[in-house]
Amino acid sequence: MPCQLPADCLNEIFEYLEKDKVSLYSCSLVNRLWCEISVRILWRNIWITKSITHGRRRLKVNPSIINTLITCLPNDSKIHLFEKKILNSTQISKTPLFDYASFCKVLSINDIGQMIVDVFKNHKYLAKEIMKMFMTKTSLKKLSYYTDPNTINLSFLRYPGAKDYLSNLSKLSCSSDIKTKFFYMLSQMCCNIQSLTIEFKDIVSNDLKILISSQNNLKYLSLSRTRTYNTINWTDIIPSLAEHSKSLTRLKVHWRKYDYWNRTEQLSFITTFTNLQELVLSFHHKDCFVGFNKLQYITFSQLQILKFPYEYPEDDVLIKLLENSGKNLKEFYINSSSNLILLTVAEFCPNLKSLYALFNYDKIETLKAILNNCQQLESIETRYYFSLLSERELLGTLAKYSPKDFYRLKLTNYSDSHLVPGDLEEFFTNWKNRVPQRPFSFINKGLFGLENREGNMRVIEKYKKLGIIKKFETILITLY
Image 1 (cartoon, helix red, strand yellow):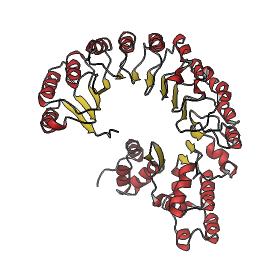
Image 2 (cartoon, helix red, strand yellow; image 1 turned 60 degrees about the vertical axis):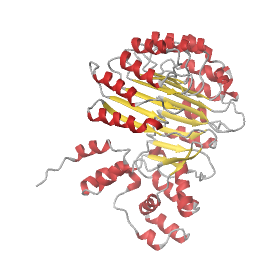
Image 3 (cartoon, helix red, strand yellow; image 1 turned 60 degrees about the horizontal axis):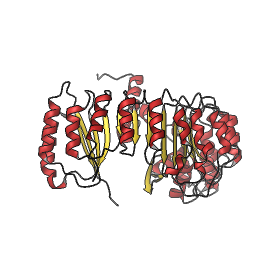
Image 4 (cartoon, one colour; image 1 turned 90 degrees about the horizontal axis):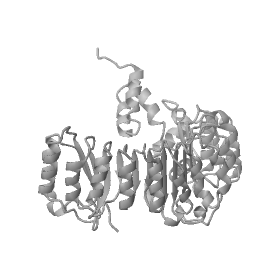
């Protein structure tokens, strides 16, 4: 008789497959026990999105999801929808194998609406009954509610069971312009939101600040304004945000349009969050950093991740910030080749493990300084195009000067690679002789030596077989 793993062991194994829907589905076909365990994880988050245009995301619709949710509806809801001629006799007669709706711990109001529009064209009554059903289930963990043309306007917070359903909500992603009553009512139901993501639209609802103030242990905050709207002023919610100065450890701000963000008070509120472990400022305009100079006088003693994916502050301000708060920094991302900033990283960030930066062709000594001083460094991401350090020089410097734990390079090419097989052979020969020897990961994004590709790949395959290369990956990019 074959040995059967206990249910708790299977559950722990399947948890590692949470994002691998295909493998989880295969597990559900093995036997009833495997099915019972895997289906709970499969249905935990059924809202799968994909990018369609210019970064906007929409639901990747699977009609079977909405049809399965319909089978989970209570009989009175099915009869009501049948009488409205929304469902047919076949649809209301089906019963589910499991109570799938009770497994859902993530709820997206927009995606419910989009799914119904795509499958049923438009049925507000169906959305209402599905939301009523969800409100009777076990507590929700994550709620997503953004306003867009497909959002179905439902007062679901008034449905029976809503208070219990939302009482343990820990993550909320929302638009700033949801009608005011929503934020007030939600503030009366849940006080333990730990992760809050706000997308600013033209309007900031008055009671958003009440919701923010009512939370007990806010740890993660994301603020974004990525589409083009009229100018807004959201200073009214800053005092509410500042109330979480002790608990907040992660802050991300993504601001595409330059408008009222440049007000000093809107940026200087960051100075209150002295316990930050992660700070990501994605500004598309340099002027957005007006007021940032106040941060050079603050020490973020616990800061471990600091990122500027697009624009970045003036050199003197950022240098002072790194001098004060770089000691425990483990990850630094800056879209710049500023020699002064990178030399400051080398001097004041000894515990750095991951670095994204650009290196000028005539500043190889700067890269050497980082490799010599940042002895915990494991990974570098950079780019190659004219005026930047060549691939051959980059690989040669890494082979000779990188610290013992270094193992990963991600290189983005915006021009054709000039690497030839001899360059790769020399690098991997030197890497093989390192003590201690750690398998190397090389991720190349862009154009990987088209003229020498065949020869380069022979070298790659050779050192893969020898165990010198742990991972090699090429990712094509489109150049506009």
